[in-house]
Length: 182
Image (cartoon, rainbow, N blue to C red; front, side, top):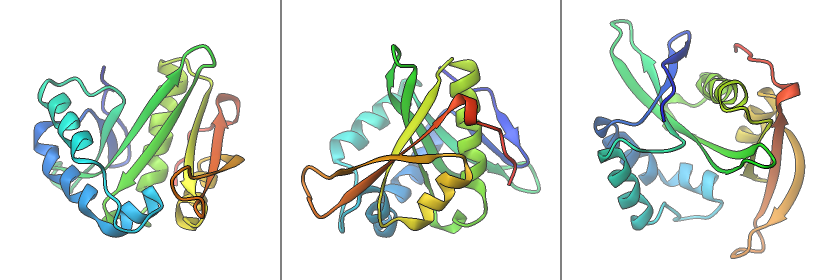
């Protein structure tokens, strides 16, 4: 499964490559990003999840994962983050999405472009009708990004392991999607 290099400006999505693993490792080791994404201090992806991902990249079968890439002025690829979809509910035609950018690339509207590209792929190539995500209720920067992309809050849930943590559930329907440029 692959997405053709869909681009808007200098940002595009492509399947992960072996050379990207060093970037993924760096992004997964970033304490503030892990806290914002996972909702807890000192959190990071499990070593099993990382090993499974590496195996998939080696076999070139990484369903749902895309590296977010920018071109520099010399058309050299610079991986700046990743975006993914998972838990596709084909009967309901919906899926969960998630995104992570390296900290050096926050606030540059890259996330907005990447989300727009993934949504266009999911809605118009995969035939899905809805995308949803969960975000820690304290992560206001991410919530603003998702709202800019057209997501609306559709619910809340408490974390099963950490009851003090609340997640916002946000979603967007295909009929509300417009590919926006920042």
